[in-house]
Length: 215
Image: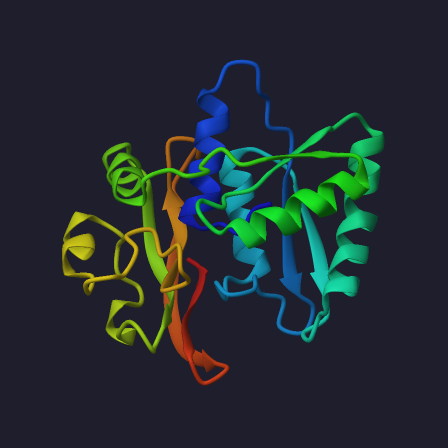
């Protein structure tokens, strides 16, 4: 599943580097009301441009703004069943440490007759961050949890300087939801994603998102 953030691209990079694997398609979910990617706030139109830069087709699954688990499961199943029938057997996720999320995904994929993959599972997030940044992945902060981080970080490049400035206890990959990113360049992208930053908005009185748009 693809969000356009660093974890999604990191999982894609790992699969590209692993012998015997061929990634055929990207799959994402978006809010049908504002047509943005949940938690990240990235416009679906921008994610489509990112998928084009990667060189893969994108399946976009619309969800109601107040989507519950049964609705989520149904929409995912409706979208993935044709892919399974066409011969695609695996779905990769960018989760690193959250066991409950992994268990949920494993149960859902088992119901659909597909096998989940977790290329980043149990990775050391400090080492992973250094590996990705050193390897040429460029990501910008698109969302922060205001209970943990300042909105001043929005728009900044996720680089070694930013990592050094993160408060103690904040995961360098934002694995606990402290921040989310939009990848604008990576080894698996054929060209950089050109974006401009717009306004910010706050969701649920807690998560501040920067409105990136295609340049």
